[in-house]
Image 1 (cartoon, rainbow, N blue to C red):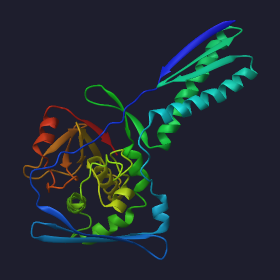
Image 2: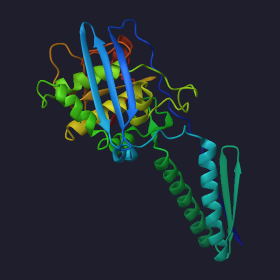
Image 3: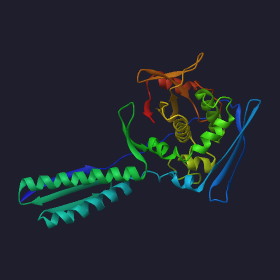
Image 4: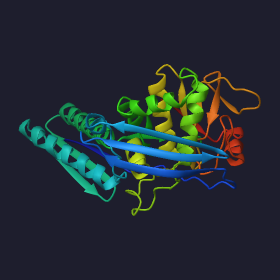
Length: 321
């Protein structure tokens, strides 16, 4: 009887984003309302003030659009992942038993191990490869269901983080009414700089919240775009994801990147810089930096000193939408 043994350690941590508050504030939200519509949809209305200028934005999302939008997935839970992997492995162990192969699966704390016994070494090795494949597949299915991806930061540390790109891709079509509402405010609806500026200041005016408290959110430190709108609050990666969603819905050919800094996130967009606007070189091209977080106002191509220093020291990663 040939025996093979394999152990996998399924342990990960979620990458938490937390934004420092800025020193000045020229921007504030002056009004927010939402109400249900007769068709089962929802109407949103916003007002904000930037210096001496007042702005307003309103849009309707119908029932079909709202249903199509992904909700904020639960906070990453390693125990939930391990349980799902364990169940999948034990289910396959039953199939192996029908082939005369004994498979033993054990879960202890964050560790899952499995061993097999078979009449030949080749049969044992094949079973181990099958179990390894089951483990990897069930892990990936878990990630996809809960909008998670693996991520490696600039220090080569591995994390599990929110799949911002998936949230954006699955939200773009349903949020098209917001794009049309912003375009209606523009002097020139084809002007990408003007669209970006309006969308950015609107998002900056939405109250900032780090979303780490369970009284405010699920504690994951992130809101999907529709939840940010419904709750009228958000943090850096939540607002950056929503702005990226709108920019890609406005112009699918526009290159948009999330810039992941230590404890912060913002965007880099393929819009030509003007005057002394700050840019980031991405794939050989200068991208305009966009700070949608708030509560302070930052114009296009302007970021706070802490973010600028982190970028200068190459303490960042980019993620393409």
